[in-house]
Image 1 (cartoon, rainbow, N blue to C red):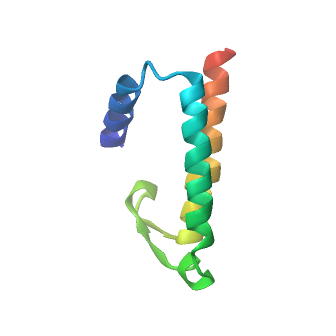
Image 2 (cartoon, rainbow, N blue to C red):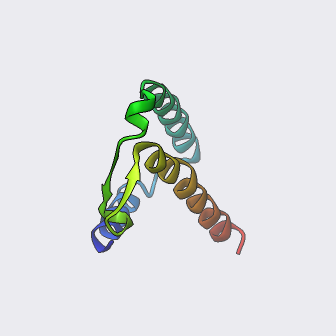
Length: 87
């Protein structure tokens, strides 16, 4: 996790001057690209399971990982932003 925190900190520093409009445009573009890519997965591919180091080496399926990263993790970030903006 220390490495991830370092990467996040570096990313934040490199993007400190990015405008809200730029962020929103990038989010829209990434959303569209993500949806296209996810739709290409077959049911069999979504069911593939492997261990994931960032979850303590626990097994997780592709579908579970996508749900965790795109929904749960994203929601946690949104809540953190809301808290930072409206303490």
